[in-house]
Amino acid sequence: MVHQKTARFMAALFAMLMISGAPALAEQAAPKLANVTILATGGTIAGSGATSTTTVGYTAATVGVQQLIQSVPELAKVANVTGEQVFQIASESMTNEHWLALAKRVNALLTQSNVDGVVITHGTDTMEETAYFLNLVVKSRKPVVLVGAMRPSTAMSADGPINLYNAVLLAAHPDAVGKGVLVAMGDQIHGARDVSKTNTSTPDAFKTTELGMLGYLQGGKPFFYRVSTRKHTADSEFDIGGLTALPQVDIVYGYANMNSVALDAFVAAGAKGVIHAGVGDGSLAARVKPALSAARQKGVVIVRSSRVGQGILARNGEANDDQLDFVVSDTLSPQKARILLMLALTKTSDTKELQRLFYAY
Ligand code: DGL
Image 1 (spheres, rainbow, N blue to C red):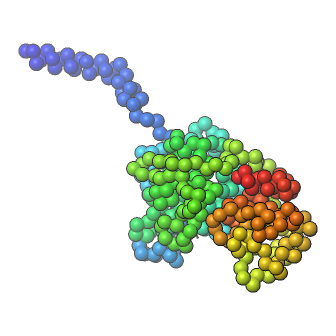
Image 2: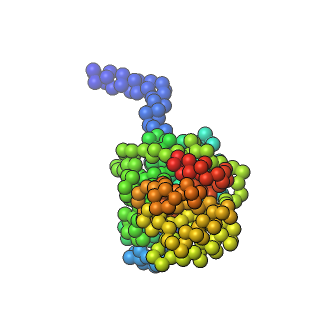
């Protein structure tokens, strides 16, 4: 008799809870997922090969963004994901025009209240460059994460799916806000300014060797241990809103027995700036220095950088930059120095101001 009364009471209590909005309470308990837009540009992450053991000699940029999303159903557990195919190219073919179009799309998306973060799938060959360009021109603190793969989607142990999952959960996470543009590869979080591709083909290719990566991605969570100290994104003074092109800046590579043929050709073709990727601390070969000085006299901005890959490019070290009116690249690689100089030249050609920008970004 007592059991029947208890059962009736519990049934009535349950009914009251259901009517009272318990499901809503349950729903409130479930965290609201962030809205992340995936902008697909191509690359190996969208690549395909003839067999499961084909890890080189495959075709990049063949798989569309919707297929990339469908291939990782776990994405739906970490974010509300939408996808856009902005390009479908191998990243060695990325151009200034691609960068301007991509940056404008990112900035437009991030002004929308229903977009919390952006992931960009990209080839690894120039990922570090696109990341740095966006680091300088994205006008938002919302997360922007670049991701790629070292193996095509058809390969055994393809790294694309887990890299994409990690990139989306990073872009959806509040800890990624205000950190600048990030690169998520191999369970690691890198800052756009200092990351580089350090191996032609192995899955651990992306490293921030001496200045250090920012953190890890593990168990569906990001773990940050450091932040970039240079200006970026919302704090950047660069604005590409009204730009349809960027000034021509080229790179001359330093080596023993170097001559000035390439430099002279770039100047003749109308380059506004030249990055000298010198040996050592940006040293100038005796038969190249006059040509660099002549180029400067013609109004071409010369930035001394280094092919070495690590370390500070010392002003007035291997050359009298004050006297030559050159700029030095600080710790930026030649390819990233080119990006900063292109954007800087949209604002000024004054070498003192240019040098300030190289020490600020
Ligand atoms: N063609 C190269 C690129 O699109 C493939 C390398 C990769 O994406 O991993 O960057």
